Image 1 (cartoon, rainbow, N blue to C red):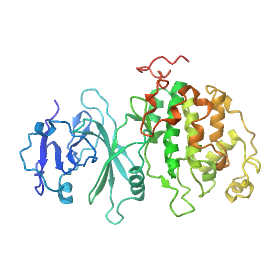
Image 2 (cartoon, rainbow, N blue to C red):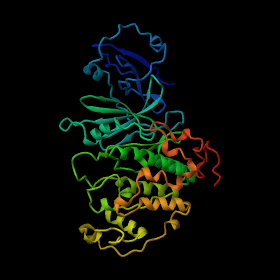
Image 3 (cartoon, one colour):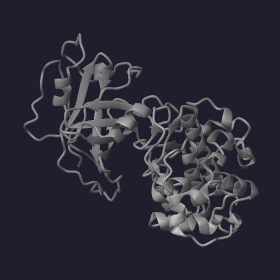
Image 4 (cartoon, rainbow, N blue to C red):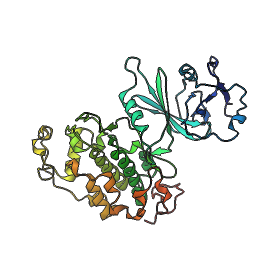
Length: 423
């Protein structure tokens, strides 16, 4: 049986006795409404509970307060920061897995500076992802966390993960995101790396939609890879993990070249370039496009030199004609690569049609300024089957509102509820 849940009303200036271990769901009454967040572990309610405020525009269902049987006086002011901190309980049990009933649940995710928990809003009953960022006493919040918060709070788009809430304590910063079922890497694994070409097109278009929105606002993602593209059960894809993102408007001409996972890193960055713009993301789009269509990574290098070798072997060793200025780059000269000829991409991605190959090639340009932009890419013939309104949808509207857009069953996925592919 599941353990029972005790609801606790946190009153202004009144602490809660947490000395006895128990399962708690916190209910907080503030001038912004009722906020209830419950962290779940496997199939059990876990005693890691977070008090987090909700967006100011949230609508409280009629009769909800009565259901809580509130008898305490209303608050004339929001809870103090001290009271908010007092409502946090740390969990010492961080293992996720089998819930005891043969059900497998999302594993906890450990990053270099954060841990992600699967949670649930007790108000809306919607699942959420809680990204808890550890704060070092001497250093404060990591710069990656600051970037993510500062950028995401201003990025509101159907294809960008939604940041619902933020809470800051002395020891941690917790970001509350909308929850999506899996990332693109997990999706491809579940499909045996054989995706419906219709689904490849739909996923790629959503990547481009989200990027076009970011790039229009001079925001570079800088870490595009399948693991940072989240997908829900409807097929809606959203850009996530903006920890390395950067606003191009910041007053600096150079950025770190240690960005973007190696397999999705463009050659100009691999060779040490630190002056780049939105085109840095477009090379990664090409690599992901190929991976979805072919079922394998395009350039799975193990080192920078190996990565460059794989790129040059397929696309040809760059020359002054294909990449002006390459012959004078010290990093390029130091490697002494063989002179490879360009190979036909259709031989490596035979499931792509001519329009698909042309679009892929437009992303994989050595000279960054020649890579096609996200906005222009959405208008290419490859996406014609999605209808004429796909690239003019309002920013907050899902692509799946269009009748032309419907996921198909992936050939490699056995238990899909989507209709047959027809391929």
